[in-house]
Length: 118
Image (spheres, helix red, strand yellow):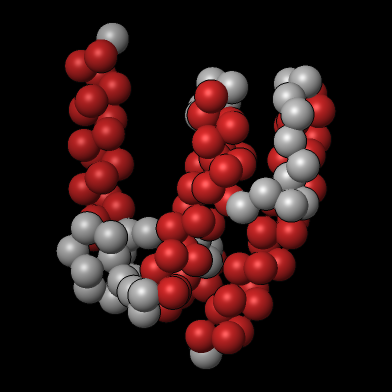
């Protein structure tokens, strides 16, 4: 996939997520013109409103990371080991941040942390 095609697809996803943000903002009585504000500012508003557990919040942070990675030519590289993320994995989820191996390790570690915190 070319860089311009990736950017186009990420932009389409951003448009979709901004619509969902509008619904979330309205439901939580927040003031935010999400059509004019950049992703970092939206993430900050959601953080201050303690909405970090919302699935939409995670999608936004991953989208912001994907745009940043694309800008510095690191899109498609694993955020942990810096190897290429498998193309089929990126085809399933353009926002994927880890290769299969590192994702498995991360999930295992995360489950361990959850067990220890209860």
